[in-house]
Length: 447
Image (cartoon, rainbow, N blue to C red; front, side):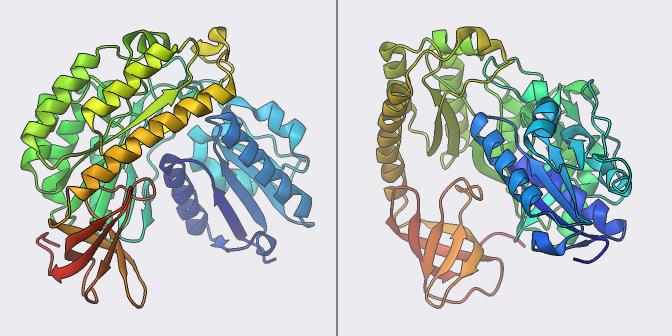
């Protein structure tokens, strides 16, 4: 173990990954060196996720493991979402914890580390009022993975979903200044990023707190001309009812904007959606998807559903299945309801047995697997630009515009060695989630 070294373990979603990457930058700027193994580090940092019980259990287990193996002179910090809601539980369940850092104050990591030699544990001030920090000069609010990078445009959420603890953890939406976001995008372009993925709890709410209307569209209109060397820009996490006509037109007419959108819908029965405190106008979804597919016939749509929400009847669940069959989404993620204390749904309890939740989840995923396979098979014979992510002796592995990293599928290619980050490929085979193909010639994208 060397002095001024640190190990950081990032748990949870891509938004957490961005915060972790930003903390790494700050630590390096302060003279600390990252290491790959905990036993090599003076400072151990776990950026936790506290969204659902399984994530909390994982975070506590990781913290306990590090605490048990901690040596003299090592310090353990819990950062991220878990500290915002469960700070006292952490102190109780993780013996040997030296410091805590709020998800809303990640930019204070160096300050906290500097205090670790004092009282034990270093009780850091965790804000009771939801806040986010200032823009840190020289710190990208992004996380790069290969040729792709996640760029956070806002934090927190002001939507009142009854099942969700994010507003309790993160507070209401706080958008980053537009010029700060654009400056990060320009810097990522200079670093050679080929795919820029804009993320927030709700990207379509960007700029509301800044007094902007349709702020996401305004941001993209300002950003895209300044990053001409970034061929792919992907949008994640749009909110039902807030995908504007202007955004659809921009996606359809700007080649950099991928014809891909993730709109978490959560359910399709109006009564369940009302209990969830979600938009219950399912016809809006139908109309909007129709508009988008008319403007972009090759559009790839991803969504997410919750099964087993309190009070969900068999008829309500069947409505969800019928809706999925009707809409033919390209990608679907589905989860069983997770009871979260302190949320608006707490009063509803968790009355549906786990076995029934699991049975409904399996039925939903079996249906979606059929749809996904059919939509993949419809691509056989077509050509796609593929962003290369890896290579073996015989295969090139990559993603098309239809696939967000880590959550969607891959395309496995034969027929050549790539000379750049992109190849042009013809689809020759289809599985439920992935595609097979062969490299045919240079890609059409400008890069």
